[in-house]
Length: 273
Image 1 (spheres, rainbow, N blue to C red):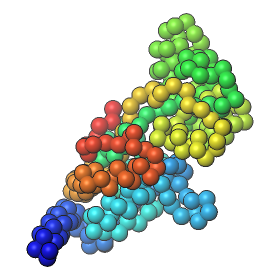
Image 2 (image 1 turned 60 degrees about the vertical axis):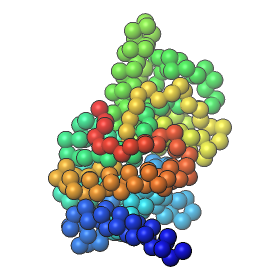
Image 3 (image 1 turned 90 degrees about the vertical axis):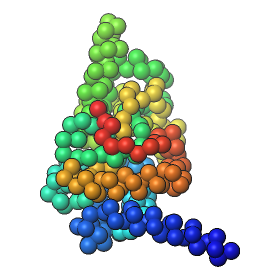
């Protein structure tokens, strides 16, 4: 029995050493990776209402990745607008906060894509006249102005509303998804948009309150961000994440949050458009 166990253990140790060796010395010397997070986007990242502890998909993923890389992870809460600049100034090693991989952000950030999603429209269940996407033509739709979604809604409206002789969707920029939801509940908006990865969770938390309208209007990749000046760390994280995909750890993590439908099978970088 010992002869069967020992080779298996050695393979595991050799694999960990291989991954660990790829981590830059700036990280291994400190023994930790600093991760920027904005915990206001459940189920990706938020604070447990009871314990106030950080939780969510990103927190679970970051903790698992750090363990596999052989270092600790230190979560640092920050403003969304400061994330990319924080990588450049080395305040953070990574961004792990439900950030969408876009071509514009790729100018300073390397994204390791770990989830497939898309911007999805939803409304209150009591809005019985809003069931199809085209029902929103001429309506007020809110979404975070810090995302690409306002322009995506406008582009979709131009193609599916104005081109068909219907009034355009009136796009209202909000301070974030929570603000858009608040305006929706207050009747100031007819519908709102947020990532498809959050809709099921939202509906489970506030039962019989919201309903999705159609499917996501485009495909997006959520990525873990690393500075473009730190390719060694990006490579180490991509390798570690792929190993989690291969051994099922990643799938189990997504299943916990009902996000199996957004799983990737191969870890790629910078797939956002």
